[in-house]
Image 1 (cartoon, helix red, strand yellow):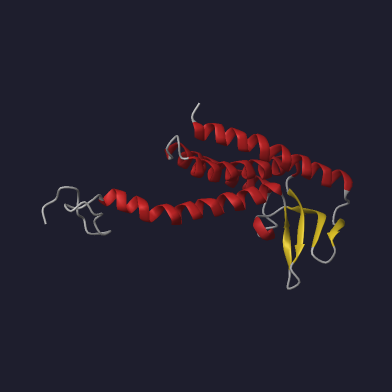
Image 2 (tube, rainbow, N blue to C red):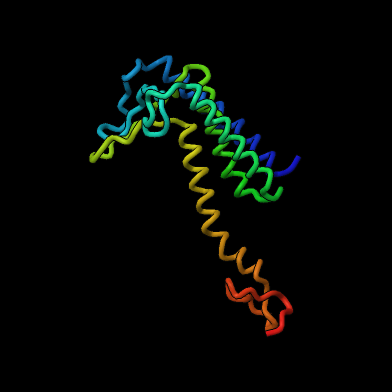
Length: 182
């Protein structure tokens, strides 16, 4: 089993149960639209349901549409996942968090036709839309993927261009290849 597959399985085994257990606890112990104040005026555990997309967009759309979109997104992520090198743990963690989060919300959509959200932050200027563990995993995964893309690009371009005749890396876009005559 490749390291990237081990990472995917481990993240799913960590994120999915945590997501489903927290959502189940909220659904069983907090009335819908109710909440528990954790840090007064800043953070509360609420019980909200989101039949739409992120931030409550597309509230009137049928659940099957979101289920289909999630399955399609998971298929795309799977194709990206297969292309990353077996030892690329950073990309594997990024995509693994996204997959685990998408699966957590997919389970809710299949079971309830909507997603259970419960983390609510009041930022004084506005109350941030309620979210859950799966949403957090997706956001962290996307953030890590963006960070990886930004940090990796310059070093990969230098390697792809290769050193020039003097042994220095060719300037990006110069088209110089190793051993090319000036």
